Amino acid sequence: MGSINSLIRENVKSLRPYSSARDEYKGGSAVFLDANENPWFAPLNRYPDPRQRNLKKIISKLKSVNEENIFLGNGSDEAIDIIIRAFCEPGTDNIVSVDPSYGMYEVTAAISNVEYRRVQLGEDFSLDHNRLRQSSDQGTKIIFLCSPNNPTGNSFSNEDIRRIFTWFKGLLIVDEAYIDFSDKPGFLDELDRFDHLVVLQTLSKAWGRAGIRLGMAFGDKEVIEAMNKIKPPYNINTLTIDEAIRTLRNVKEMNRRVKEITEAREMLAVQLGKLPMVRKVYPSDANFLLVRVDDADKLYGYLSDKKIIVRNRTTATGCENCLRITIGKGEEIRLLLEALQGF
Ligand SMILES: *Cc1c(COP(=O)(O)O)cnc(C)c1O
Image 1: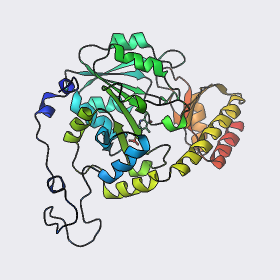
Image 2: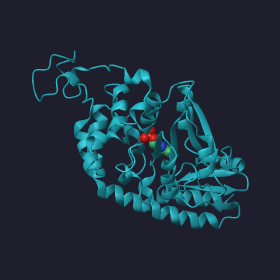
Image 3: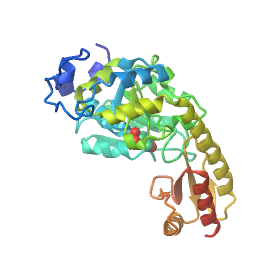
């Protein structure tokens, strides 16, 4: 067993996972009298495949990652929770991440009673490598990096991210929820090089399937095995599996919409930059723009009154008076700009 094994919590290592009916009989069609299912109401009367083999086959091809290196969660949020519970001993271990970033890392760590350390980003929201290093210690099991980052929209330099492996012995989790909106290569190609790397992706953003809840974690076989061991047996339901398979077959449609969204993003950035109350539009590799304005609370209230809802991020570190605006359809953008021009 390699160094991953030494990072896994002792109780998880010794855990004998629940073995479901579908785990114990792996053959094809048969008379199924093993899972106390109702024989009527097919096909949803049956439990889903706990290992989601058909779906993983498609993801494996699409991402060029072996099936044994893929974990599927009920959204990335479940993958985040499961990885924390597999690796972080409550009250002892800690997690390091940057600030501002995706709020779920901190909340999920807190639910598991795992200390969460925030490392402030630089002025332009770039990674401060030295501060990251200084904040990590022997108890740091996980570093979360969201790139492109939410809510700032920028990506961290791949070189900066790679440098973390020169000193960090825990798991580096790169959350690539927005990677399809970026021109920069993600980290999937580097999984072979770094066995302590885990990449998170999701169907919620570029694929337009936030409603079905499907998140993907890619990593070393030992990491994926530890996660599989503690996941609920049927965490991905049949409707989600079927819809995900349909969705992932249509890469063309996804690419077409992503192109539309990124073009609209660049157009909106220019238009916003011309408005008198806008101080700065931050560059974005995602499907949203972070915009600094004169008075975020006031502008947020004004837009809400007009039934245009954006995200007020003014309380996030380094985001004073910033609104986060998701790129909508052309008509939605037009309504937004019209409202802003009347402010
Ligand atoms: C939206 C988002 C996700 C997606 O989470 P799901 O649970 O898969 O919907 C993950 N990470 C970040 C940073 C996000 O902004």
